Image (tube, rainbow, N blue to C red; front, side, top):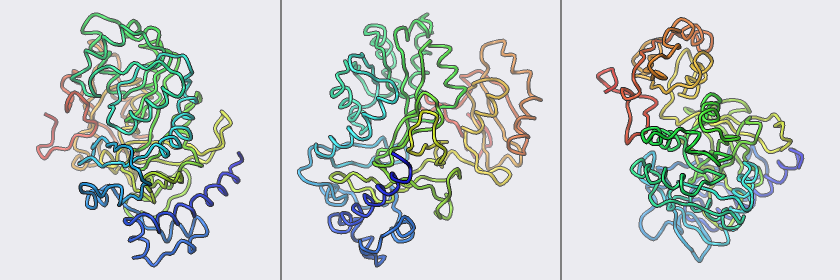
Length: 427
């Protein structure tokens, strides 16, 4: 569909969602009335941005208690099940769901996403997503609808179960893998500990479909080289904002369906709207009725919405996800994330694991702990090249300390990308 027609469709759906929120969601209805906004007042995207208030995860946490979760969000009865978010930034929030809404969201968002990322009927697909999480629930519904043979090993998406995941992968030899980047890294590490090469561990897997943290081009190349898969797809989004998608084979950003969500980007400090290509926090409005009402939910990730049409021909806009707001820091007047640091390192050395040390107290220099790639990492002698690359990209210098990977700070075996400590150094 041409972009102009997609935007016209969005506006019609947006006005319908505002009307529904006003009349059927006590939470959103109260907030709209407090601003003096009636449904008929919203007749354009500008009206919507100006009149409808943003809400946050903390707003939800303050409101939710016990049985009132569906009452607050305005989900249609009967509620079939409740699904949790991961709680990465604090207490988990809850989604009240019914099967009519689940049918719609699986068909219009997740089936399209997985088809674009090369999942096909008859494949065997392996997934290590938590079954209690909204994404795990939707993924299993996709597998069932598409006629995919699902392998969901016992255990949740934590490192405690990585050994069992490795054994299941070796036993079932799936063609498709759904999980998180850090879990793939942990499985590769566990395989090597057992003397299994990554290409042997992932033998038979054609595609990796990964969510949970941004994937840089260098990291994707590393996975392709080590595992021998055909392609790596980057999936991103949010359970609270109920938006998401995947990149396509051209890897120019995550395709976000404009007939499912109205996405905005706002300044992290002022919450004022930003234009295409500008980096800020995402704001999601869900355009599918019947489930939780998501009306201008402010997310915790830094993104940009790209207006250019993808080479694949899809006309929906694409989204680049950079990292959590909590992992960002300012240098030379620019908001940076570990994604930016990765791109600079990869330009000289290829993919490397690293941690940014105390960015708020290191002056004009970016301080890094970078893990050696083996005992004879040639890049360890490229400090001047790395310095020049950082100066070119960010206008600031960099101080690199090369360490063994075990000297990087981890929490539950997951790498801490930005380490902040009053003592001024990593543990």
